[in-house]
Length: 309
Image (cartoon, rainbow, N blue to C red; front, side, top):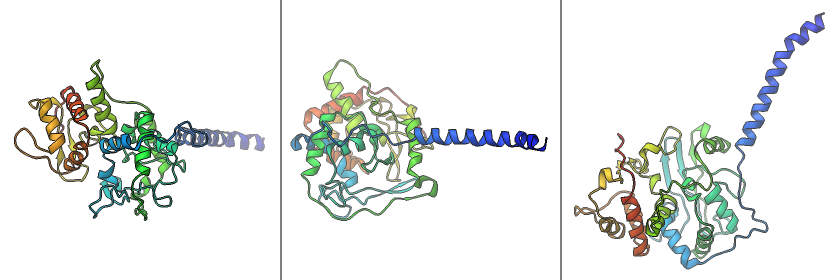
């Protein structure tokens, strides 16, 4: 009788332990980093460095990855500190140095980083690296970008590690973030039958990841859809990035926008400042046709009110 009562009391504890184990295993499985491209035997091969230079400029790679304090924007030694509510991120070295950079990476490794948000070591990247936008990159563009990156100067030395608050140091938790806010291959582009508009959509929504700066984020660091392109806090922590929907710049023409992307001059005889100066340094290297495509797509964005800073 005593043994029967003991079993009766132990049963709820055993059941709870079993349920807990199932939940832990499910969470472990659901948050597992998934790399979509296999390095061994991959069909992804190196592309064209000359075309990759355009992808590099459109993606703004140098704005974050160039080594601070030196004038050559092609020395991609990283080290830039990015402040955030989660702590300070340090941008990595992506020069072709085989030890400290990405010189040992394959094209598939780069594709996994850009499209899956997964490192060659099989770990989640923090979404401060804008793979939620890059995820819809075309494979040819990944190949070409790889070829261009491999042609740049090697830079030795690694950036300091991220300095994050304790909870956010566990990269596996990024898997939960991905479950909520990341869909591999998904683009937010609004398309029509105009090929110029389509090119602009790809540049704005994917390569140039404009919404990453021109939007407000929720407490998890994900873009709030209602504020997409409607403005948000400057990533540098100073000021507020403007609304670029017609609610704010509806009076700008396509030509006005294309000129701003080339020279930094605005229609009211002003000049862009803050992080937008780096953007213009990149977009000025694009073909004029790409700047016009970007302008056309931005002019087509839905009107959204500016959120409060």
